[in-house]
Image 1 (cartoon, rainbow over the protein chains, first blue to last red):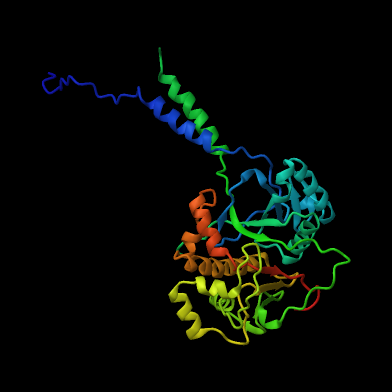
Image 2: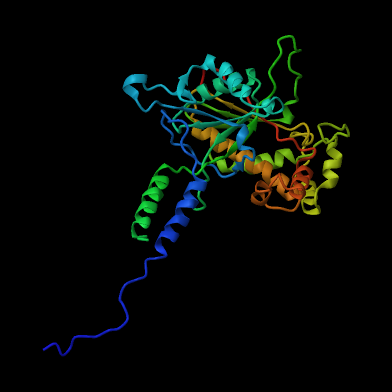
Length: 154
Length: 209
């Protein structure tokens, strides 16, 4: 009856013994490259792209400021707001916030603090200029407009 | 030992990190703001008009470059390049951290740039020399951030091209110099000596446009 039944001797299974090792390797890669989100961004962030980007070398000196329309427009309205750390701050709160951030750094590094601004596409320049004036006032002169790299084809 | 479930556990962790990962983006356009203005400071020194390259943006995102309307933003890059390297009346005064005068900057340029300058530039109506050349951007309060970034990008492109060509690199290679490496840092400093990146963001007027 079972004349045609194959009698293969080698097993058909793929050896899976090495699989955990491979997965672990991937896992370690992501663990090492991961930066857990420290703050939840509460404003819209569609950031315009640019071409001539510079990479910041000292990450410790960078502090982030987010500007854009609030995501929760029912609660906060539709005008662009400034978010620092986890809360919205007004224009007049910036100087104090910068002093706070500066005090987290060592004394020699204080003047080198870099403010990285992540600003939404649709924001008007008025608020940006106001922020800049305040940063000047707070003596945080190094600023960076964080932007993603423009791709080659457009 | 039964290692079969090991892969599942690792997978679970892997997926967790995949989801929470945000590869840090520490890239962008840098800008150095002018120092805080003291109140008893004398009113700003009058800069000669020819040493200022004016870019104005109105609330409809239309550009006025050197008092003439401009439609193609991509042209700014070449205009600023020519403006910075104009050498209309280079001075011998040594300025800045590097103590380099305009004339010394000119001497340090590679032959290709020198011949370009003598052939095409040197106009009396444009900047006297790179040490005094200022690019001023005045954006209306109602203009968009997007156009501001585009302009800033163009200005950086112009300066990076000047710096890069001065030491025989392309603008991209210059941008990617790693300043933690002493050799590359020396090249970077050499490229920038005497040519300050003077981009000024003027206070906007609240009306008009």
